[in-house]
Length: 194
Image (cartoon, rainbow, N blue to C red; front, side):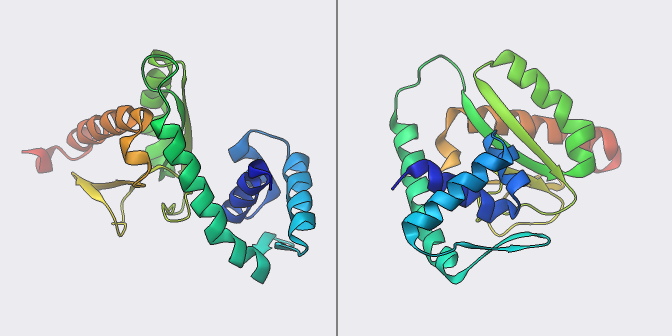
């Protein structure tokens, strides 16, 4: 079984659209479609129902999802154990935030961080909805709503997946986000910072 096919399967299951999965994996939507088609052929069953609004998991897809997520966790564990190729944080980190906070406040700070660490790629998901860590939609989420597993920083809730907690890129971004949230909270709500 080709791990890449399962990776595309997970991204399509999370995003619900070929275009969304393509954006998250950095390929064309046709590549995602081919990979899903190949996996469905291997599995001998359709994994997604194609609908007007996107793709929805079939029963076979729902049964495959936990095993694919377990494989993804195993791959992340192996990547964590591997010695770092360069110095400083590297790899991809997905940060989810509310639309306004993400685009107006976080984007410039994250851009500077990636300039300081050229091997670090940060995918800022500034969306008008709550992202779910359990579905691995992001590695770190900043929201105004309290997630089930969270660390509290001022009036913003920040949380991350357990697997991402020990990665160098997560720690670097977490520290920057924590400081950014504190500074912006003081700037936006000075009465509360006293």
